[in-house]
Length: 353
Image (cartoon, rainbow, N blue to C red; front, side, top):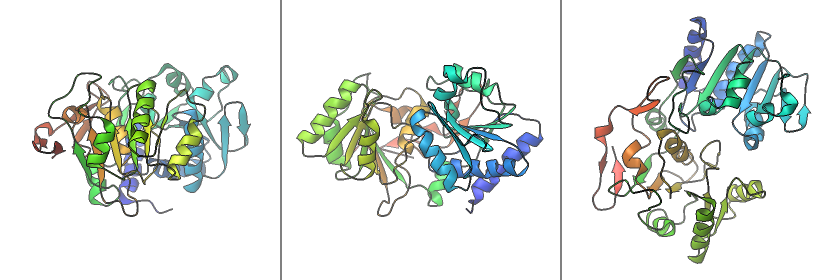
């Protein structure tokens, strides 16, 4: 696989950090930038020097996706540790989820590795992640948003930040599509939305493949019913649903147009055909907001624009996806340097630079 120029530059910057004595840098690259292929090249380099590598996936349900992406990128000999299953124990690379390695089975006997790659490392301050990471001498974090769900920074987990690319850069290069954002004129109170999501869909992004972010399981179920009542094919998923994988698979296959979710599709979900997102809940912190919007920015045949309909005003707080941002391991994790450059159309509610 041929890496893009910004991926090559990111690897060079990471190597400079390790050469300077850093043991745990964090690579920040937007959703859709190719973090896993970049990590695969780093893993191949480590393997060529006789090192063993671990790859820590964010959630158990993202494990298969991580294995597939690594193999697509050329890292084929992989040990997969998934729940009670452990295949390929002689492989120099293992892939596992934090949930699996935190289970009783692995306490005190974590799989050996010289180097640990932590995907979706914004979870890295969680106790289980810290306990796992402490067993590995050299680490690499991968994320689009170096900020915990509660807005905290990650300076106690990582010792350097490398920003490999930005949404603006990748959009200009054609690796992401431009994004149009609609929002109310003010930030609304919790549990208040500017209009019903089905109305927002039919007004701003009708007919598109769409994901909707709901506040609660009950909220998601009611929204799905409302979409179907208006003739829009729709399903919903939540963490408690056993049939969640099959519903998501049918959505990716194009069997219905709208998928409502409760915190399931915020990160690690890839379906480039999705062209719109409706935010029917508030995002208190920039990390979750940017992760959610990132789901719809990948290019796809016939897709020249992505649409975000923000029903609560999160965009007025966190800005448009292409806003230039500053990342830090101390103090405020994600901040916007040109916050005053955001404007809003008083007619349609469009938010733009």
